[in-house]
Image 1 (cartoon, one colour):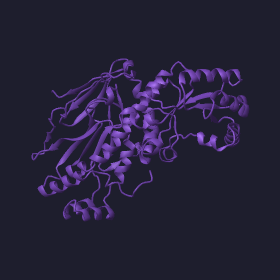
Image 2 (cartoon, rainbow, N blue to C red):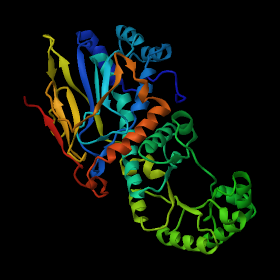
Image 3 (cartoon, rainbow, N blue to C red):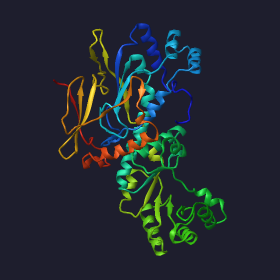
Length: 439
């Protein structure tokens, strides 16, 4: 469990509670409803998105309780009436949640999450769910693009200093699900089982009387397989110092500045000439997916990415929304409901999504059946899994085991997409979204 406040109930917007207050007074708060979390489009003209944050959201849901401190705060501010405070005091989510599993790929209007509960129980989760899904999925989507263009070379997440302290842990987790190999963030390692890494910064070199002294100290502490940062002063001299100190078994050198395509080639040549053909070269200088792609023909062995991954490489939120799509009528039948605002229309009704695939197993469409329609055939892959049943969270999706399963699933799901899905330039989604609403 991530260290945090005992309750997550106030990680929400006030209007969630005022809606409950009004609905309790009008007698509609207990109507059975279906809420849906989805994105109308993919951010930045990307070809696919990666679902991330599922395990985090489920763990936060377990702690979603209004304790004495939270209730007193609401009472002092007169946010809601006394009867609503009594209702909140007893709040426990008792509904059912289905959705795309973590690590799944998604497309415009994919119904990533279906929350089936009373109006009051479901609406109060809107802000919490969106804040997690929007950020984590944005990071995972950007990270997945970086992993694809790295073409098998490892990438470490190093962006903790470029975002909020809690976001840093979430970003490290999401990047790992998307295929990053490690993080510099220790809390992500402790809480989520993400492999951690790290050696030294420029300050360590500057601390010592000479670069050689700094390298000697690092090698003495961490062994010759460590990675030495060689661009504090002159890179060529730094390489010579590193080899003199660590010898031919030096694990790696790191470059954090300069014209990387040219510099990496020069460093590789120098290392080889000095008898260090197996010393790895890691680069960490303001990289994003486009910079990594530009280094595809250069002898880089590993990458470290900071700002661009924790900010979603220019899209820090995935643009997802949470809407009421169905409610029970007075006759007990489901009534589809939808927003019709220009540019913000939603599709009403309960959904059942499948990934349509051809005989070769390549995805051709996101097929979404509405209400009780049936869509799909034997080659199609169902996308919904149970996440919460009658208020009980499915433990499979939680903790380090959930992260490991999500990481594996993302890799499998990406292999289903057509090759065009890996293009970096803006364009249409890799596959279309098709709603099936006829008989």
